[in-house]
Length: 229
Image (cartoon, rainbow, N blue to C red; front, side, top):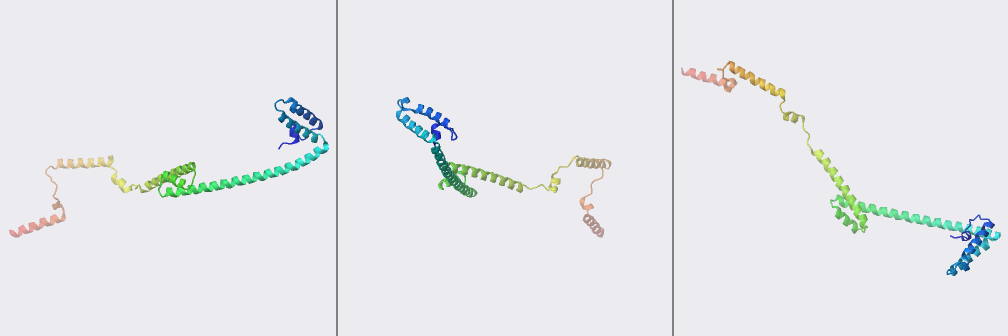
């Protein structure tokens, strides 16, 4: 909003002498006789300079102008503040609506992803809900990546839970004999060989003779043979 002070190129606190010097300089610059080829523009500007100087060079008119101008400025600033507030409220409402729409699209994509649909299906569903293509692609990519990450984590947990633990008994049974056990078996075999060499005529007794039932059967046959003689 240009003021009379702006027309003369002086500050609002300029003295009378400063206003006079500024007027002379501006008048010489914009006099029609000094602006050949642009007389119309120069004439209009020169008239504005003359009007500004007429008011600001008079103390009474300058005081009235300053008070009126100050009032106008307050009204203009108040109006501008209201406009800015209204603009801020509109922008906030637009952001809230956009965030709500975005959240709705994400929720929709998550629902279809939970049902096992792939990224392309999510993208198509979002486009069907009039979601902007760029945003639909972004949401579909993000939700698909999230679901894939969740499935991998769930599979890893399931694999870890289903892996059987090795019991202590199985571990003991599966552990091969160590050097001590092997050496014990070898010592037993050597002892048997030595005994056999010392008593070559000795044979292992039949299992039937060493078993109580076998002994009983032998006595019974001896008894029957005694009856015959």
